[in-house]
Amino acid sequence: MNFTQSEVRTYYAARVPSLRITSFREWRGPCPVHQGKDPNFSVNAETGLAQCHSQCGRGWDPISLEMELSGFDFPRAKERVFDLIGRPRVPWEERDVEAIYNYTDANGKLLYQVLRKHGKQFKQRRSDGVEGWIWGLGDVQRVPYQLPKVLKAEFVAVCEGEKDCGTLDRLGIIATCNNGGAGNFRPELGPHFAGKHVAIFPDNDDPGREHALKVAALLAPVAKSLKIVELPDLPAKGDVTDFVNAGGTVEQIWELYRKAQPWTPDWEFAVNVPDENEKYVRTVEQEIEVAGGLAAFWDLAKFTGLPTPFPKLNFVLGGGMRPGEVYVIGANQGAGKTSLALQFALTALRKGYGVLAFSMEMNWRAVFQRMAGIEAQVDLSAFRTAQIKKLNTGEEMVRLCRATAALAGWKLQVSTKPSVTPEYIATETKRLAKRGAVDLVIVDHMQLMAADSSTRGDYEKFTAISRAMKQTAAEVNVPLLLVSQTSRSNSREHRAELDVADLRGSGAIEEDAAGVFLLYEDREDAEAARKVPNGSAKTRYTSGPVKTWLKIAKNRYGIQGAYLTLHHYKAETRFQTPDEEDHSDGE
Image (cartoon, rainbow, N blue to C red):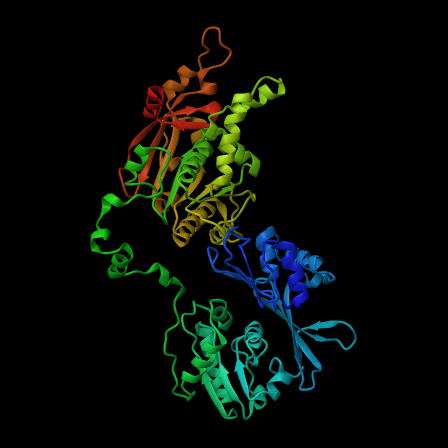
């Protein structure tokens, strides 16, 4: 979508006040997305296109930037941008339209339009002759995009889509394409290129290359010269816009055109299309190089995964939680699995790691207050009661404020969207990992996630969730901690010990998880804790500590079948090991 320079200035002055807006073509300032401090965020004053050259490593137009800053979907972000710059709101049916491309005849008379909708969906329409539109093109004459410019130019670039044409236009290169995308370049478009020097810029995928070869075969008989230009270092499905956004210049494009060989029927691409799955494949030599040499490859003593709250658990896991793996906390309802997951988060945060938590049970404030309560070791229920009774809570308030201040300074992001799908978790994790550091993902909990429309029944649902979580961990290359409830049958039976089979969706979890931690109370100690002591209205079972077992039911990289003794301080919603208690007493 195009904006005037005045609109660009108005938008960024309102939404990115830290940006240094000058009379120059490029403005600089701290990135508002990852909230940086250095001037690594640049804006093209003419187009409004922004780029973070630091942590985010990507770019936006004003609407996609508004989506990032506000969390709005495309239609709401578009409305907000239009309101800020003073544009009237578009009709309801065009709320999700990113751009409208006009196709005209040689004299500039409108023939039809291509509408690019959010999500890279396209629709075409023609005028009804009055003031409305007819969807579809019917038998209307087909023309190249920007035909008047094409006819006047000696050199013309042919791209796969209108957006790429706009990219080259801004660099001073006349560019065109056909409507309908790859595979739809019609023979009747050929005469418009007669006597011209033509350069074809294909998208970096098989359909894009086939399209380029088809266009070359149709235009070669009429063009004065014709070359297919291969752009270097493009990702799979990348295009000329990606090349420019990554720092490619007009000088580089002209140099690549100069070096390209003229097209002939025997011409072949020099480089194969990169496969999207190539990132999952690695040779021994490559892994040794990544490790930093053969000695480093085999230095197992130096391996440390992400630390857990308990040193003994780190040892049992063989150094901590490994990147790209899924770990599961399973327990009966009310056993403290969410509290334990938040302790995993706090341990990572204290050591400077970034944590992304998906909470489908609690809202943001509840999550933050629970974490601060755990950190401060304050009974929030008793604290609330004391406040209601107007009792002195000064000491607890000081501890909670200190814990909250620490929490605010750590790298924590929390999403509370309810009933999310596996695809949402995967997509949102990758998006937020570009905004800020994500070294641990926590999903609480599995049974509250929604099934995709294609899944039927609990077995398919939990299998799909488990596989998607594994895929997410692998793609972002961080450990993912998945909280899971046990089946209702186990909850009713209250057996003394849990097994993996007690988890809902246990089959998929057992296959995909690197580690499964089962949390349950020690029956004998729980019974003893329920007894009311003489002269007391509270039982130890209510406030703790209550002896609890953490069973390592599966462990792909360490000791399997180990048991850790924990003490559950229920009032403070936290766990700790007996040796931690001994250590604190000694201090």
